[in-house]
Length: 278
Ligand SMILES: O=C(O)c1cc(=O)[nH]c(=O)n1[C@@H]1O[C@H](COP(=O)(O)O)[C@@H](O)[C@H]1O
Image (cartoon, rainbow, N blue to C red):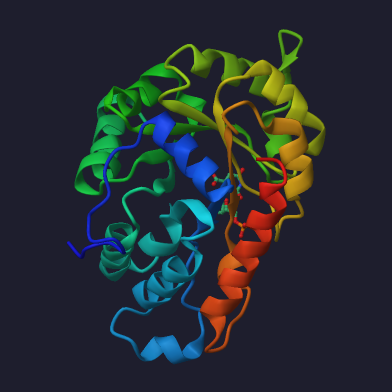
């Protein structure tokens, strides 16, 4: 394994450590490493591992402003073995005190979910993994058995298709409300977070009232049209309680040889907007 930016590998993270990072940096920014070979600056394509070279520069440039990095595994899996190697190097490079998310949206019958949990918590030492809850309790539970690891369960997603199922009325209430309530009963605010899309502006305050204590991972700011002010005004709790993900809006802020400076400037701007509320 490569050593990280501060010389150690990633580990486990308790809620208090996440909250402490948020207060130190006055930021709830999660930088999404959705690294796409067709979008990174062309001069990096000569590197032995262009994806890692890009991520390393982005991490160096943004770690002052970010309390979390989210690695969306799709962008790595698409490259096969090389992609998994880039993922491993990237994860090892992230400073230990920054919360790491494997955005893999897993969930299957129990013994299969156990293997997914081992993948992301043992083989790769992420702090958390995103989970699709459609298969129910026994598909989520295996992820919650690991000490100081987190399951981040889809609540209301940011995309158009979230309206297909998540808002359907079941026993008079939208399906997402049942999901939040049931999933919350399977663990605690110390090991479960919920994904809540920033684009679902009308539901943000309501979801916070349903889950006052849980951390929310909030994607959809930037490229998808969500904004920091609306998210902060409606979802912050006394521990901050949110991680706001921005992927394209930070990592592709520039695409020439100054891309890292452009990413730093974008991350700094998001942090500045967040700091007003923290
Ligand atoms: O779980 C997620 O992270 C996620 C859930 C959701 O509802 N919407 C959503 O966009 N995401 C992810 O968040 C990131 C958003 O990327 P940008 O739109 O480029 O900031 C992508 O990695 C998505 O896969």
